[in-house]
Amino acid sequence: MSHLKKQKLYHGGIVLLLSIVIGLVPILQLWRTGLVYSGSDLQFHVNRIDEVANSFSHGQFFNILSFTTSNQLGSSVNMFYPYMTLIPAVIIKLIIHNPVNAYYISLWIYNVATFLIAYLSFKNLSKSSTTGIWGALLLSMSMYRLFSLLGTSAFGEFIAIGLLPLVGWGYNRAIIQHKWGTLYVAVTLIAYTHLLSFCITVSLLVVITLVRWLLNSRFSFAELLTFIKAGVAMALSWIPFLIPYLILTKNNHIETPYSTLVFQSLKPFNALLFDYHFSRDLGLILVIANILFIVLWKKFSSVDKLIFGGGCLLVFLSSAAFPWSAYTETFFKSMQFPYRFLAFAVVILSYTGGLAIAQLLKGKQVFYRITTSMILLFIIVSATFATINTYKASVLDHYQLVAKKQDSLTYSPFANYAVNKETFDNQTKNAFITYGGLDYWTRKASDHRNFFLSDDVHLQKKHLGNRTIQFTLLNTQNRKNVEIPIIYYSGIKYSVKGDNKPLTYKSGKNGGLLVHSKEAEVHRITVTSHIGWLESILGLIALLPMIPLALSKWRHVSQ
Image 1 (tube, rainbow, N blue to C red):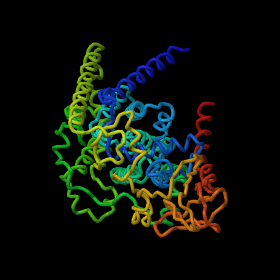
Image 2 (image 1 turned 180 degrees about the vertical axis):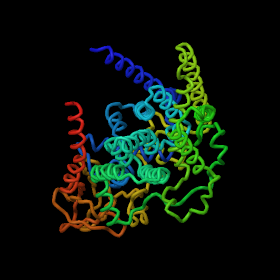
Image 3 (image 1 turned 90 degrees about the horizontal axis):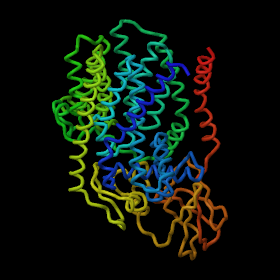
Image 4 (image 1 turned 90 degrees about the vertical axis):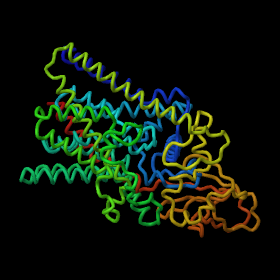
């Protein structure tokens, strides 16, 4: 092995070790309590993770209906809210049986992935390993991301934040080298993570491209062709999710999360910069790093300055200073919360903060670089520990531990109850009626929710695995027609049997499956959802973009 390869392996090992340690810092204090501080967002995502885990354990990877979680009503939530990037949490759930440990290890894995993706992306954007390390460190410890990670447990959003640096790197490769692969992978992963983040990402990329072309006073056909290639590849890979999504949306009146622009609780611009509580803001360290960028302003390129300006503009859009009241009836209302722009601002300002610290260390003696780096690292880790410790003290004082037999959980968008390893599964096994519990039901089922959520003594449910749920009818006299509490979705193929004999079905008056039997006194009804030929074909189509990427990589290696 050459000296250069050894040096690369050594450097890579140091970065990996640093990512593992940094990934543990935000969660260690909470993990040691043996408790998870939860609320409706976490309850929503835990139900999704558990359902996917149960499906995977039975060899089912598509068309996942909620037969074991989300009130066991056959909700199609995982067909409307993509779950691909939840797979690491699903795998850990299947391996580790203590749910509290599984939860925190999942967060740890996502933290490590965020650090490594940011490091590689920022390093390649700046051509500087120092920028890569410090930018990744700032993003990992940024307050907005930590609040999404621990304060609201918004899995979709905090995973998407970790992927955004890859979008920046991919965009840079597209406009400089006219290579579309990295941008395609990044945007596709975000599309399979969080739809709102995907829509905002694409919108910002379009705006950035148009502004660049205007500033440069030229249109680049080569760039446009590269973007088209990335877009077509992304569309092909997204087809297994997109086509069923469109079919179900077209055939059913779906109850989606509300589309209302909520701007009344936005913070003032200065509060986003200087409010250092555990909340949705930039955080002290990120602000200081970017003040350093301003101090060293003359040492940066015009492109870096424009990137910094873009980050500041996104902070402004996330604040109460922007007149959002004038946009309540525009397409912005589908974004729900303008503070979502802050996620993109945090990524950009982490990069410029990394540039600033790298510039501070550039050309200095080894002792200065090591001493300064250790001081900065100590300050960042200490500030994060102090913030999380304050949050921990707050939740320990105010959030009650869920009782083992508690049937339902109180609503709040933020953490408002605590669970331990004995009560963690209360979030999925008992009633799920808090915020998000009725998302992606049909309108008909939502209007008759009492039918689905009531304790009907005539029906007993039992999950049989392999996309199948069984109902035992205790009182069967003269009952040829019975509506069972499984949400009926037009566009999903069901197989219904009564005592092992095929039965016909249609939508009932409550929005459930109305089952018809030619014979009375059917005792057991089983319902199975099916993977159709369409899903299989779409799965194969999704792999097509991998072929040119693999051939390109093979040619590169061969040369």
